[in-house]
Image (cartoon, rainbow, N blue to C red; front, side, top):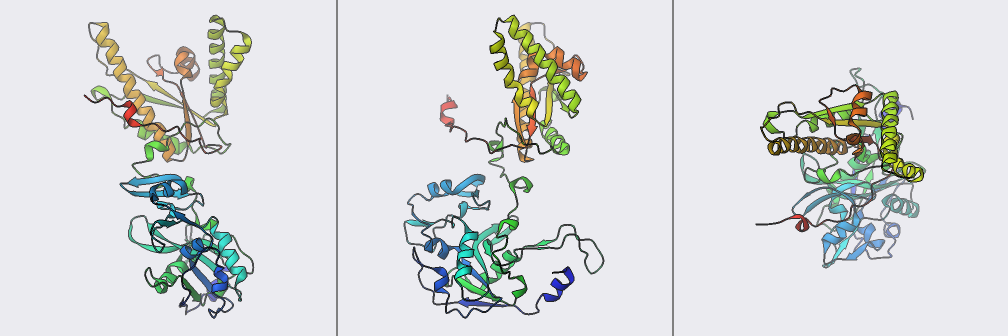
Length: 431
């Protein structure tokens, strides 16, 4: 439908009607059958609270330990404060407690979200006696705002959003970011007549027939922002744990500005004597990268031959460097000792250098964490430390710069494997 026609189709009146008398829903119930006498008309949009969908689909769990249920339903933890957990579900929703709900269910049980809310919405739609859209809704909090509202977690038979990008407003201003979350707006409106304590789990929204489609439509997916596009996908308490070593990268290009922002985080690390011991060499030229890695490889092979390794063993060991060759972007962090103190004995001079090395490591760790915040994976490889003269020559670095490994940077080709659990008690000594 042309954009002007869509605007003309927007009604001046919308009704929201509570559907009462549904009663308690139990596993195996047919939600669509419960709505046969609801007075539905073609063009209506039916908003169904996810709780009754979960009950009907048997998504009820005996859970004296709700914490375990939340962990099981979480794809990743985004933020944590005390007992409050914000996590991402397998559906891609970022929400409190992974949608695990202990309200409006029998004591000792919790409700889990439907396995596939879009499929649930489509099953209900197909069973209704009129041409309708269906929304499965759930309660969400919102960043920077107090209070809860209902949003769509499953959609069928309607357009879920309105994309105005590329059009102009009444003053001729180009709209570059205006995308209206229609399904969420309708879910929120329906909650006004459903409420939390009224026992009304379904509402009919009438007057938006221009949004209803003949087929299932795209579902809720267009409303879910991908984690890589979410500027707030990590909570402050969990951002350190977001850094994971990534050794396999996709061919998606790396935003050099994101790397530079990570450098800004790196140089915010603590350092001795108010110095700045960090330097970051951004290897952005493909030719330079190939020349560097070839030279490092030859130096490594020479060392291994001198150690007496067989050619077969050398080939196997050198293959470990493929992580750098396969990464779309390389960064060589370097240590400089400018501002360090010189002492009359080697003991203190050695300690001075170690202090600067620790500061450099802190800078690299900051850098790696910020790369994760930017949605980039990384692997810190030690190889440049074993052939510093070669690296300095290829990259034309000052003799005072000590390469401290090489960081492979890119977008992860697959989610990282789970890290083996570590108990902090095993690493603490109290005196």
